[in-house]
Image 1: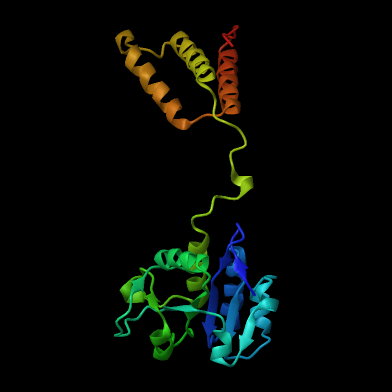
Image 2: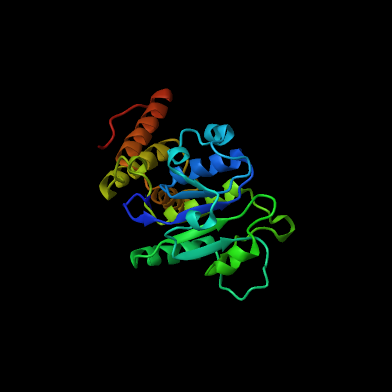
Length: 252
């Protein structure tokens, strides 16, 4: 079993140790699939397996069928060469303490070197046993409020899954559909707008016109308008002049 990101890079294993609620397991499956992770191991789930609540909460995640479920801890950790223990409590052990972002960056380097990182998540009520923390290379913790540090299991999985993909570009469909308007189109829009403002008596007193014009152009320059937006705005200017009975031919 191998997990990967959008670029086909193998991903780490996430290991749920003695998870209690099927709903949390299912939600973890769902968010892992959201971020392209597919190596989930479940050790000794309290309510047994299969679990109807986990299946329902997984919302069709393929991990419900592919997850490795085992009562044997060594089986659950098979192939993992480096372990990270997630915990919100200091354990009195001399270990590196890392954020999710730091740990995922290190995990990518380990994977590139042919190793298999495994991230351990403890039971909702008790967290990871000290024995597993001791077997881990580092402690991974999140900057939660010390007064309310206990994070829901699936939420903790979600934070780490997000950090695995955090450096990836946005999906293709979210890329801009149109390039920004060029300088000539913007200049003609400025002139069109300023001509109509002058006809309406906006620039008063006249000696302030250069500063007022500069401020207006700065507003539009920061907006990063597209060609379509420039055409739309010039159409709006024209509609306003028609409403005033002052429609006339303008520069293209």
